Figure 1 (tube, rainbow, N blue to C red):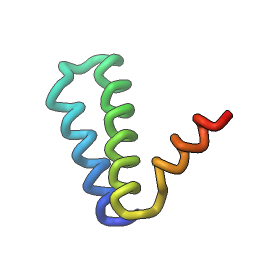
Figure 2: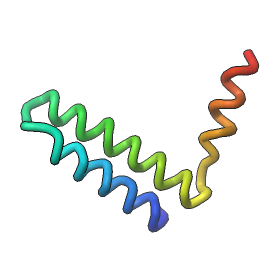
Figure 3: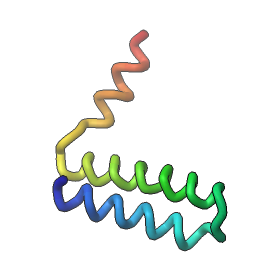
Length: 60
C-alpha cells in the first residue's frame, strides 16, 4: 500500500478508538472508519478516483 493509504487507515482507526467505548458496536465502527480512512488515503495517493465512481453512478 502507498504511504497516504497507510496514514489514512491509521488515522481512521485512531479516530474510531478515540470515539468508541468498546464492544461489538465499537469494533464495527472501527472497521468502517478504518475503511473510510483507507479510501481517503488511496484517493490522496491517486490510486483510485472516487469522484469518477460517484459521477458514473448518477448517470443511470
